Length: 148
Image (tube, rainbow, N blue to C red; front, top):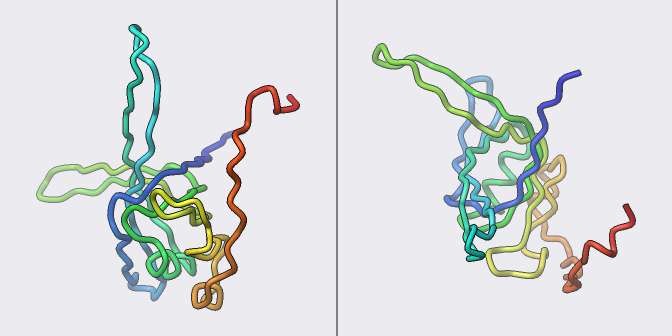
């Protein structure tokens, strides 16, 4: 059995770019930053950012370009794919996350999900209306609260 599944939560580092493919389908691309917080050998807190190229095909593409902007939070579920192409006699590679589902998070620094609809399998009707704000949860979860 093989498995290629990715879950990322981060903030967009640029506005999504919407394009139409020759077959008429939409595709949107954006970059997502994730942060790793850790302590070095001396116990000092360190942060390291990773940047991920994300592409989304189909009905969700238009909704993403409408609702997400630079700084927006997003949960991306998808797979890793590496494209190769040749340009001017040189081979190029690009590793991307091909998103199958994108859930919209709060704006950077925000605590409410009411600014954008849930990503889901997005339809044009859900992209045109704003849902009621979801409740914000301020509770911290400790490892002792997890039942396994």
